[in-house]
Image: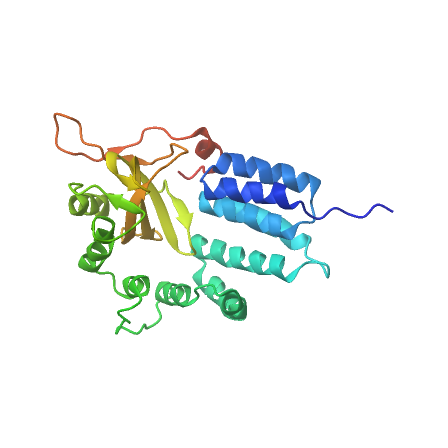
Length: 279
C-alpha cells in the first residue's frame, strides 16, 4: 500500500516566501495547488489561511481553517497544530469575535509562552475591545502596549521619528526633509480604510506611495508602510519600504505645482477584486 504524502518542504516554503513578499495572488495559487497534492498537510492549510487573513480575505480564510480541522489526526505534529491554533486566534481577532478569540487564546496561552510569541499585547488588545478595565499606568518600556492602552499622538511621532534620525542606524530612513508630521496628520484624518492588509494579530498595514521618500539599506525608495491598530487611525509606526511588488493603496506624492494632497487609488490589483469583495 502506497504511503500517503503529507508535505513537501521546498514547495511549502515557496508559498510562505511569496506571502511574506506580499505576492498574495501567487501565494494563494501556490497553496491551492500544493494542497491538491498534499491534502493532509495541516501546516499548509494554516499558512494558506494566514495568507488570506493578511490580504483581508477573512471569509475565505475561515473556510480554509474549517477544512484544516478535518485533517487533524493523531499523526498531526505539535508544530502544525500550534500554527493552526495561532491563525485561528488571528482570524477571530480580525473578525471582531473578541470574546471567542480571548477564550481560545487563554486556553492555548502555553503555546505562546513555549514559542516565545508576544502574548501580552494581544491579551491587552482583546481585553480593551471587550470593554474590560485596563491598567492605565503603562510600562514606559513597552511602546506598542502603551499605545493600545492609551494612544498618544506625540508618543507615536517620537517613535516614528527614529526613522528620520540620521544618528539612528536604522536600515530604513526617511529623507531629512520628508514632511513626516504633516503626513502623519493627513493619514490620521482618512484612516481606517477598508482597503488594507492585516499583520501581526491586531494591526492593519497600508502601503503608501510618495516619490523619493526615503532609503531602504541606502537605496532610494518611493513607498512607505504604515501600521495601525486594527480598524482605527491609531498609527503605531511607519517606515520606508522598497515595494518590489508595486502594490500600494494611497498616493501622497505632491504634484510639482500643487500643495501635497491625499489621493485615493482608483483601481488596485485584479487579485483584490477577486478575493476581497468588501474592499
